[in-house]
Length: 302
Length: 255
Image 1 (cartoon, each protein chain N blue to C red):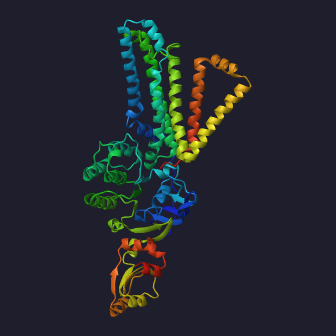
Image 2: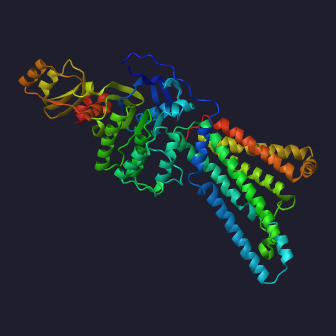
């Protein structure tokens, strides 16, 4: 039986007149990998900060391991969240971070951390404030992986990492997750990089949850239809359009629908091209401005 | 969505959790230069300067007794205190954010930080009180200087020197730390209100004392309670900042 680890309802955070997170509802189940996706400033970090008790919600209820997380040591000791903008004391080097980690994470695997430090070629004796962006990300990734916390957050883990390091993260995460299942939340705006890792998607935009669905359901759920404008328009007439681009007499429209055999044949008859939409494209469509803007205006602009 | 029955968690969280508090002490001590290294480098530097000045004056065959007397007004012995205010600020401003990232509660963090302050103050108090006695025993490090045996030090024995240093150390650390908690909780607006509030309070106190002509009484009272009494007031202030900081930090949100 899966257990719910996090349950948020009506969760809200305001900064003055700005509502960073606007009455969101969602749950996180045990031992799954979640993607918390959205644009910069969408509210991803704010959600994670509330889930980990670092900031206090202004409204709604929040249950993490059965309780409100803030100031509850019993909840917090099961959580690991190294924020992308995590601050370290000035005097700290990565060696100090890894020395202190086992005092705070009861499942800390020092050997695993050692291996990751080697894999990422992280200099242990350089001041944290002198590390490059990628090395800083590596510190967070190593703590996140080696802590084996039942609820682990990775906040923009790919920021500044080179291709090899990204691959290492991907491999080690899946490998370790298979052996030590836990709930993982990956927040990122580099969606295609992590698309294959994710089991469940939460797309957040302007403080609201736009999508809360199984990743497999979402993959291939949308289709792009391209061809002559008139043919495309008539084909998508009564379908849910989530994106539209046009150039001269040609149009390319993305619909939120998986097409059946009959539709595919009909599209082919009208000389239309069908293409699957990657997760990243889908989310660009969902969170991009084209969703809200008047489509005719878009066409004029194009 | 899976239908879920939440099992009530077995609460394994006692009210007093020494390990959770102690690990915060260890976190502060993981880079020992901050609390121990730099303050003693500063004090050591001040000592070297005092020694050099002493050697120059002795070399110029001036009156050694007069020099020792003059040095009693030097503040060299207090030189690390200013730095310790900064240590108090940084202990909260930087380390809190990190400790929260590692899953410490604000409560445990403040208790652990307070314990660290206590340990540091105790060690420094023992060291300084002992150095005062050493300086006296060696006749001012064999050249008649008076660095530790200065101000109120060296007049009422080891225990009084120990007690006054302890109180002063706790005060400077807790002032830095508790004011930082105000910033973390209410940001600049809180700091402004705190600053202007404190200034207004001091001015009001001065005005009241002046208009009621009670300055002589106040000085008489301060003279009456003596060195130990004054530093008991200092210790009380430190406790006030420590308790205030605890309540402020419980809802503080570092960036």
